[in-house]
Image (cartoon, rainbow, N blue to C red; front, side):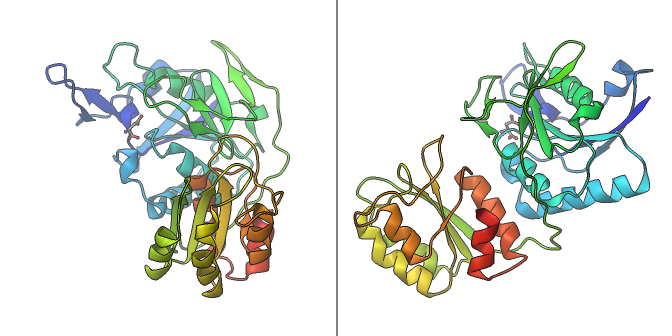
Amino acid sequence: MKRILIIHTGGTISMKEDKETGEVNTSSRHPLEEISTVLQGRVEIEDDILFYLPSPHIRPDHMLKLGRYVHEKMAKRNYDGVVITHGTDTLEETAYFLDLFLQTRKPVVVTGAMRSSNEIGADGLYNLLSAIKVASCDEAQDKGVLVVMNDEIHTAKNVTKTSTSNVATFQSPQYGPIGITTKSDVFFHHKMTRHDSYPIQNIGKRVSLIKAYAGMDGDLIDAVRESRVDGLIIEALGQGNLPPETMEALERTIKEGIPVVLVSRCYQGIVQDTYGYPGGGRQLRNMGIIFANGLTGPKARIKLMVALEMTANMTELEHMFS
Ligand code: ASP
């Protein structure tokens, strides 16, 4: 029988709706604690509550604590897989952090819910069962951290929350899911091509994230630089371009040795140094800005926070993002 560790961290999957007011909040008993009864005789379940937090309260230090906890538990007992329940708002950031941090070949699956445990059409228990199915599956090994929701299996690297309320919110734009779950089975149809992990000890660097817009000037970039950040992520326009009025502020930022990482505000595609006009990708690349291929802004931020714990060398940082 497979042995699965479930770690609860909070989120809607751990919450209940007040039938009178409609308010959704944490409840005194974890609504999914009966999962082991449901699975009796099929999977051996051990479940722990590590945090009881809505996911907007989750910080990078919680992510590191969770990653360490997974390592500690796995060192003590031979689990076949781990399932983590998490609020959906920042689930993709925690999943991606774990993907960068964890050193294990075993399946690690993150799941959540869009509806609280006692709402009509509640998806939490179903998603948890699907996640346990994937975590128990030999084929899920060596695939990095996976996100399982709504019958789909996504990679932590590519998945993102796309809808505020739809149960089919988690999508991997451009790439799609790497597998699906059915009532009785798990099917993978794609494989990750590369997987790096970074064994960091701390996560304390300050990295800000700014989104570019038409008519943007350098004020926001200067304000961020003056707030003494360790790094800056910019969600640039299109293929990786910025309004020319931002250039001087960017030059000042780079001159101070603050790494600036560029992603696109488009939800598909990668950033490239195609355009030669002022503010175009060519000028940004020549200035020393790092191009992060294919990551969203929040994930590039997690990666830069992790990378800065390992090095401050610009060439090495660039290499980690290439
Ligand atoms: N706001 C909730 C959270 O992330 C949403 C959810 O869990 O689905 O904690």
